Image (cartoon, rainbow, N blue to C red; front, side, top):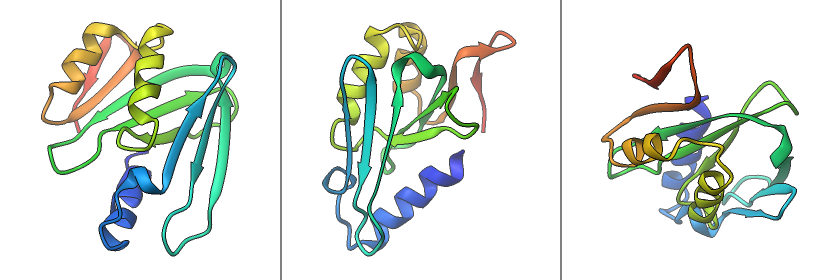
Amino acid sequence: MIGILNWIKRLATQSRQIPINQWFYVAFDDERVYLRAAPPGRASWAQEFTWSSVERICFKAEDLFASDGIYVFTTQRPESYVIPTEAEGGAELWTEILRRGLFDPQLAIDAMSSPGGLFVWPPHESTEKVDD
């Protein structure tokens, strides 16, 4: 899971510092979330998932020099969808996740103010924060 976000960060760094929000895009409507990426020097891709298929969300807090990541686990596939918060539409997606009650608001505050760590909702066996 963390490897995908590291790949995205590495690709952004290798791409002459082109900001993630210029090649990774997130949009959503009442039923679906749409992801589209056109990474420099790589093939473009698009994915989508339904809001109703969301089972778990993890927030990977990073330090000030890296983009935080949203990992969305769904019933549609075993691996998560990985969305950098710095993607175009990433902040709006995070707000919508909170509005829909898919992540605990207090845990979100803890995660966003943390210097690092993985925060999971709903928690596994009452563990709200998983250390790296």
